[in-house]
Amino acid sequence: KNEVEQSPQNLTAQEGEFITINCSYSVGISALHWLQQHPGGGIVSLFMLSSGKKKHGRLIATINIQEKHSSLHITASHPRDSAVYICAVYDQGAQKLVFGQGTRLTINP
Amino acid sequence: KAGVTQTPRYLIKTRGQQVTLSCSPISGHRSVSWYQQTPGQGLQFLFEYFSETQRNKGNFPGRFSGRQFSNSRSEMNVSTLELGDSALYLCASSLGQRRLYEQYFGPGTRLTVT
Image (cartoon, rainbow over the protein chains, first blue to last red):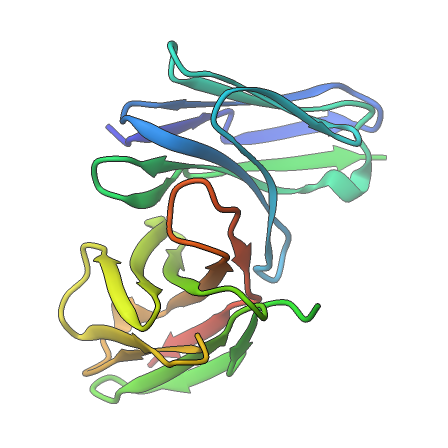
C-alpha cells in the first residue's frame, strides 16, 4: 500500500463544475503539498499546509491531521485547470517528500 | 526573480554512459532537492542538499550521486546508465531545509536512455 493515496486517479468534468480531489496518507507528516503539473512536465506548488484550510483564488485546500486526509477543491472549474494534481507529504520519519500518484483532471468547455 | 533553471532540458544517452544534470536554484535559496519522475513509479525523492552537504538520500543505487556548490547550484550524476533511468529529472529549491518551506520546481530534464 502506498503511503500517499489520491482519488480519483482520473476526473473529467464540464466547465463550471465544482471539483474535489482527495488525498489520504499513512505516515506522520510535517506538511502537505498540493502540486499542479501541466503537460510538458513543469510543476507548480499550489499550497503547502500543516493544518486547517487555505484559499487562493478558485482553489481551496483543507487538511485534517487527525484523519490524515486532505482535499483540494476547485470552484467554477475552467479548461485551463486541466492538469495533473499531485499530493505530496513531508514524511517526518524519513525526512523526505513522498508523492501520491496524481489525479489527471480534464475540464471540457 | 528568476525561477529555478535546469540544463539541459533534453538529453539522449546510450546504456553504459554517464550523465550530469545541472540545477540553478532561485537566488537566495540554499536547499536543492532532486526528484525522478517515471510513468511507472511516479515522483520519487533522490536527494536533498543544503549548504553544500547532502542531508538525505532516497532509495536509489549508488550510481546516482550529486553535489552542491557554494553558490547553491547543484549537479546530479548518473553513471553506467540503464534503460530504466529514462525519466524526467526535476530539481526544486527552497529557502531552508525540509519541513515547512515551499518548494519551487524547475522545468525538468528529460533523459532518454537507448
